[in-house]
Amino acid sequence: MSGASLASLTNQKLDTARRFIKQSQDSDEAWLRVGLESSAIFQLRSALNGLLKEVNAAYSLSGSLDVAKLLAESEDKQIVVPVLAELADLLSRTDSWCFQLNQAYLVQFECRTSMSSVVQSDSLIGRGSDAGASVSFYLAKLVELVLRFREESSEY
Image (cartoon, rainbow, N blue to C red; front, side):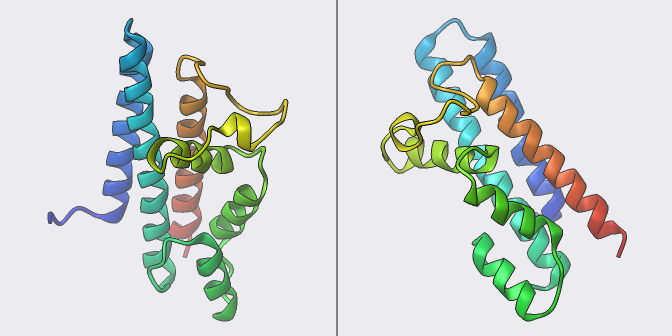
C-alpha cells in the first residue's frame, strides 16, 4: 500500500464519486447511468468510512467504523468529537442525507429492498431516477462534513 495520508485517501474517494456522478449525468444510456450512480454510492460510503478513519486517527480511537461505537468510546474517554455526534444524529433520522446514503448503499450492494419501500416520506431527497441529483446532494453534504471536521481538528 502507498504512503498516502488518510485525508488523501478520503479525497480520492470523494473525487471518484464526483467523476462517476458527472459521467452518469452526461450519459444517454439509462443502464449506464444506473451503474455509474451505484458506483458513486459505493465511493461515497467508502469516503464516509475514510472520514471515520480520520476521526479514529485524530482522536486515538479504536479504529472501528461504527459511529455508535466510536461515539460511546469517545464519551468513555471524555472526549468531545462533534463530527461523531453529528453523524449519530444524522444516522438516527430517516430524512437525513446520511441515513439515505446508507439506505442507498444497502439497496445497491446488499440487495435490500428499495428505499421507497423502507422509508415512506415526502421529505426524501430523491426517489429513483433523478438524474444523479440525490447522489450529488450526498456528495456535497459529505464534502461539507469532511471539510468541517478537518477545520475543527486542525484547531487542536
